[in-house]
Image 1: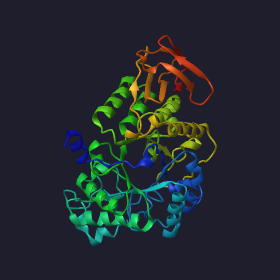
Image 2: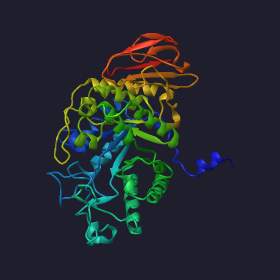
Image 3: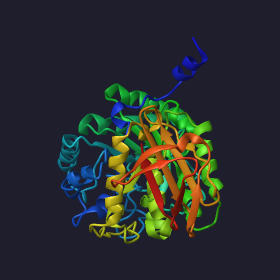
Image 4: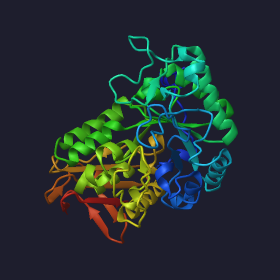
Length: 434
């Protein structure tokens, strides 16, 4: 057996064909519609699908703890019952109707799973207190060093807890035919638990697993996709002038050399954590927002849309209260739709091994211009982004970028050669397709 075969056998979760160009969309059910229920999400599925979305990720759908609750409605990540739906969102039948209709649209549905901790008043506290971690006084404890006073941590040295949690995961797949899970702070739970859970789930149906964590080892036996937190942090720092463009290049070097090609990394400019605690997409990225969105969709990684981004994400959504998304037509929504359509039209823009790797195109202003090609024998996409607040006249080195191109969303055509220069306004991007 070759060394390559040994590596593949060790490990790695095979990516389903349907995910080759997939896009994921996060739903905060509480804030998504006026009533804040499953029916409100169900009625919007056609609109979500029209963005080009393939996976709908629902934030936790379970009842929320009342003891030590934060705010009026509490955090959805303080789970009171892993086998029930939050009555604020509707009934089990309402949830099943949402999943069934999503499947009719060709959408996959994954639900948020909170395995590391529970609410203080989860019945497990009384029935199985030994399943919980304790502090130096022997008391139940929230996650150390975090202001998570509304939850207490589990202890995964307890086999009974592991068995319970896997049974609970299986319940949602068997009864409601969901397609997988987004797993909260997945790195706080041992990797061998995730491997066991994945094996059990895949015996029922192939599932899609997303880890809220950034560690390549999670891909070995458990997860299809992990968060690209460092990509987001780098883009945020770059937008505010707090790092050089070389930091972004270091991310892509790390991504190429240290991570397996099959591993999906979720690229995003916003999510519920970023929106609530760091600001809206506009606050986080300012004039660099469009360039960041372009890179999240057209670069390597699976793009995430946080609900409301397509409507301009005009405010920070209150995390513990009702705070309706302000829905409206917006150019950001148009940008996402057009970029996703381009992604899906080009094999080279696929996710992981389904697409082509990014190859840097050196240019005359490496401190300001980020340029790369994704290509095959049949296709080529050339991307140029000015990540600076200055206009830049840029030329390019090495022959990979050369060729006859069409502009991605117009009839403009151009021949790029060694003598080509492009004038880019501050923060402007260009996408050329051959």
